[in-house]
Image (spheres, rainbow, N blue to C red):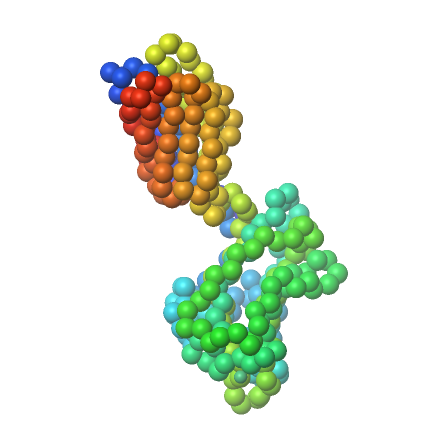
Length: 283
Ligand SMILES: [Ca+2]
Ligand SMILES: [Ca+2]
Ligand SMILES: [Ca+2]
């Protein structure tokens, strides 16, 4: 696992001092990191043996349609022996108390031959003694011209030193033709739910001279939510699209808009006299 800093965020108050009644927020420094435990975008037609040491019949080519990382994706079908599979290297997940997240894209048929009932795509993990099914996509489903993304948390039984991922298909066997095609791309295992996290120090001052220094911890989640912890003054709440900061009886500050690590956040403040101002989180 690695943590690669990709961005820093500084948070400053822009509330008007003339209004006099708005808390000031200074010096919130946010370092954003991107982490990945295992990843394959299938960038060439040769399967990476360091990532997938066991390969049975699976190939990488451009027969899928609209690959998320084109032109290639993993291809599984009935050729040559009734089903293909790839098995990952051992991945040590024993240090993760929060289950990592598996994400991948899949496509049924694409530019190949359509799977039929029972010609399923199956994702499994090794629990130390046996393969356990994580997800199954039915061959009876509709043909696809785009890829669907799947994101799921690994179960607790997966959090051991010898974790492995297996992707396999079932299809009609033929030594000469490819039947029942599935395509998979952008396989990624990453710590979850925190993909981005940050710690900063801040100070709040009001017109009454109250000062409340403290530390705030921001966690930006992969689903776009933002968790805020450790704030000593007022209350914060958030959902997928807004942050609300309330100092009871004094002021409220609200941000509305999709919360992502890439957003420059700004919002409005209103005091108990109905005067309004603005606040911002600036990269
Ligand atoms: Ca690709
Ligand atoms: Ca094959
Ligand atoms: Ca078929």
